[in-house]
Length: 415
Image (cartoon, rainbow, N blue to C red; front, side, top):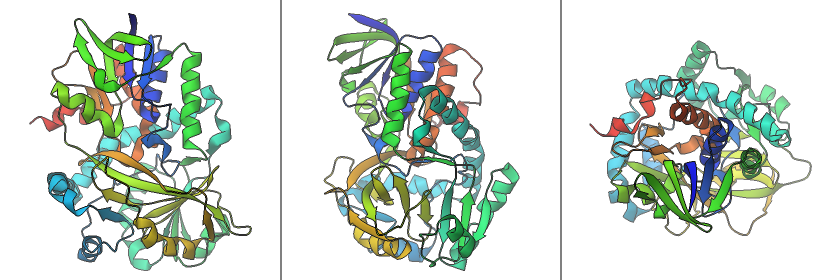
């Protein structure tokens, strides 16, 4: 029978960052997953570490955008019709959380985590010797028309008030940064304080290797075996049963599989998303990620090629892939940048774990001694992994946390 101080379930960027932060504070930690570090949801993203984030994703308020989505013509969203009755309560809550007053509240609630995002990554990048994966040249949001750019006025005003670095550019100035972009957009915002990575999987693995160097162990196991054997929690692993006084569920979209049998039922939904890597035609190249604001996709330069990411798909987490958004957005993407042929035979599919109020759950599980939660990071798992790791490690070791964790507590869903 093996025993450690803490078991961390889930070896994505969030779980790995938690395990590393706990190990740095002298705890005996075991990281348990059925796959390798970073091979789940953490693998598929734009690679942006965006401490500049102000507003979260919102429910569309424009009736034309809603109509395009309803008619399955929108590049930024797709849905499975049979799934709509299941997701309807969550969508209603998401719409309520998208009201201007609630959005402003979310901005201020999430700012402490985003404000630490880049710095916490910088610390781990240095310790893990992962500099080769990092770019510090920001990222670009592109706006094809005046109307879409004007809609960002409030975001830019708040960025100024919060001291978040950016440069507003015209099309010519943006193309000076990225000469391979075609001149089909009128405005751009260069978010200068953001970092990006060329291989998110490799970055998570580098953090995992640093964790191992500190004495942390990683085991293969099924998190669904978690159960209480007083006075410990127990998980079955390939190396045998593993006990700990504390366990942290950092399983992203799979967290409900473990928590629901324990009676912890929080209103998590998943937004499925796809990516696919393409070659670049001729001498075309990108030096940083770029977002086409009107069409809801991102082009990100990766070691594997140019990664084209889609918007959200509302469908059951484990339903068969339906990557129809690529057909809708590829013409716009190729109009912007000279994409060549796809590199993989099939697109990659992942599921983003999302709460309707666009906050993760970080902290104790109500009613369960020694059970901790760290999931629901939505579109920001890569960005917020290390900041989450530091916050929960400070909470667990009795150190004054760098920010008030109360707004991220599960208790907000219990009244």
